[in-house]
Length: 176
Image 1 (cartoon, rainbow, N blue to C red):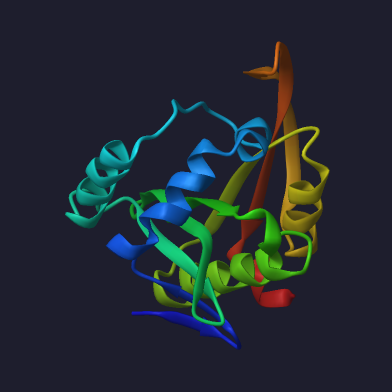
Image 2 (image 1 turned 30 degrees about the vertical axis):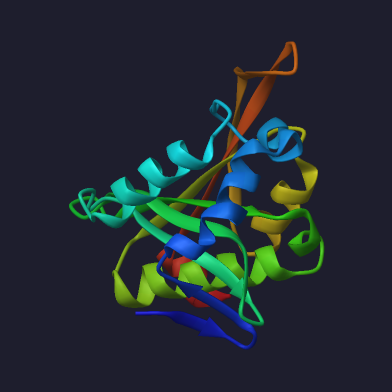
């Protein structure tokens, strides 16, 4: 099922998306703003990832390509879906041209609708680097609450960064 909001479509990841997704994983600016770590990705490594994620072997993760006006501009995911406790984590990565113009906010709102209305989840969470103010602002605008900051959790660019833990409860979503 595709999720559609105006010119934005969240859809299954296709092989044609690999170049955009490989560029995202190899983008030093993106890497410096997200938790975790990654190694440089070659075309072959990207194809291996694509084959693995499209095989559908992980029921706890739903990944979407983000299209704007028919062009792939990134990806979004619900991962760690816990159907017993009704929660999941939200992640989003967009190419530079798709940042700062409301697309990320709209994608998060689409994921909220899908999570709470279709999957009947109770809480969404996200972890954002403390100094990634654009992402923090986007999640806060989308209704997420800062639960706390885990100090010195992520090592990037020669120093440790705090990691902000955000959440949105279904009842908060319904009152927005």
